[in-house]
Image (tube, rainbow, N blue to C red; front, side):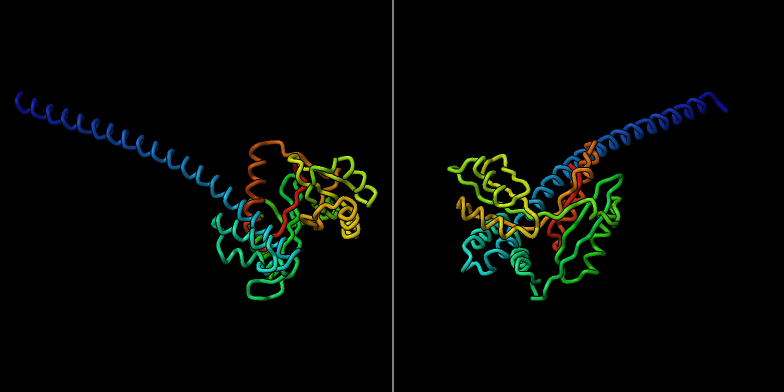
Length: 277
């Protein structure tokens, strides 16, 4: 082989090597660009998730309020001004018409098709020790059980008895008047037979807890004595003091929050109670 041939082969090898290095560098640069784009997209998806969660929470709150006002004052907005005003608020918030109608019907104990709804209580446990009670109204217990079991399973929770970790209490919410002091409310509530009294941080709502059988008696006594309007009244599951647990990590707090949001997104779910804080 001549010297000239060797030089040509060497030149070709060098050119081939340079091409490989150039292509590798381009590929690496493209990969970094893609990764960077992926990270930005992840952040966008994360931010969108926060917005969606806030929107879902608002809609869940509106649905419960619509059902409550419908139950207490009637499902016809023409004769229930509070319901009419809430419907306007819900529409401005982008709440779908079908969901508004469903919530109002649920307040009357009916599905949108007119079928009577049945009450269903589901008990569950999220390891290691967070007890859950889910109160539902549904036209199909089997479907609701199946749907909620899937949600619980996704988050690592399972259906099991937890009611013994809670106690039933009546809860009455009153609209507080500025002219009436906290001590006056407390004294009147105790005299009426209340178990406990809480006043919201904003000072606009008074919550009175009673024995479930005494809700009507206590509510009437306080209303008559203090002229307070009743905002809402129901029977709740309140965790017993010796069963309450504190969530120790931000990861678990986020997991519990996401679980509750997913449960409340189900139209059959009315309330979710936990023994965690």
